Image 1 (tube, rainbow, N blue to C red):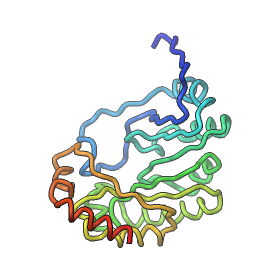
Image 2 (cartoon, helix red, strand yellow):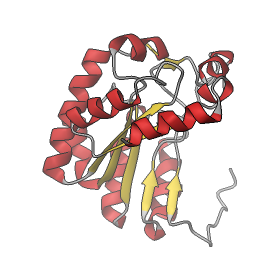
Image 3 (cartoon, rainbow, N blue to C red):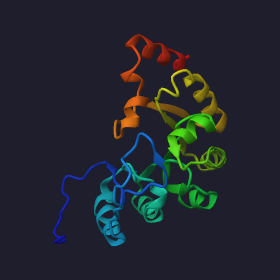
Length: 216
């Protein structure tokens, strides 16, 4: 606020979001009603791009928000200027070929969070998302990734809905062109999240069996 901040010990990896916006309402995510917040565009450029980026190696422009609702173009320009790789974590629903191709030279890895390998599972968890549209977006992103040389990662929360389908999810992701798959443990931001968490219901032996099925 006083414009007198000075960063001396600068990080190599920046995880930073200029807003807390998301276009979906996932059942296990932040409670509804959280007020929208933005950082001024000038602050994003002056602090993140001009002060922090010059000494960084990697930028993650998402901290619980959807980066395609933020200053993604400004950040991509900063990454190219300062030779920083951008690792994007996105729900994938707002990607278009034009948007992705524009920032592709700055991307080191594109991480698309897709909770489920069927429309029934995905749309139950990712309220507001359209499965078929997302699948088309992922295929497009895989094409851009192959052409521009960045990695494509897909992830899902490890929910009760997914316990018996981890192998199917991996085949689904591979079929869309993903280079890697990640299963993430649910964070308990809502009551629904607790009910969906296999670690609250299953025995350790069952959890290990599911892991083995995924690895196989």
